[in-house]
Image (cartoon, rainbow, N blue to C red):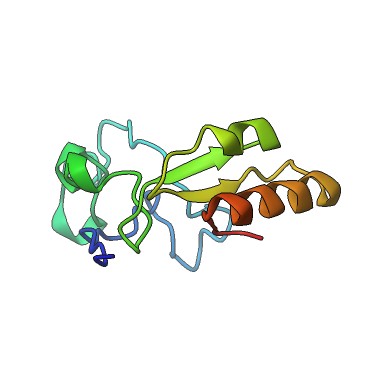
Length: 116
């Protein structure tokens, strides 16, 4: 398989994140809306904002770094519908018992499970 190299982008921080006198500001993105906001006015020192230009090419989206398309499965029945050449990712809410059944079925079909 060919390794997929997606474009990198900067971390998008909220306005004033990292200022020592404003410890209460979390790092998660929120759109700047103030009239005098430097980040909204796109000053370079304020950091990058998310926009459509940072997006990866359509062909690379939803691909695992190995180059294979991922299939999210919640149960054993969904594993049966996964096509060859894909890799399986088990949903986070699946318990240990069902997870073991999914892994066994995937091995039987010759599929790779990303999070056993």
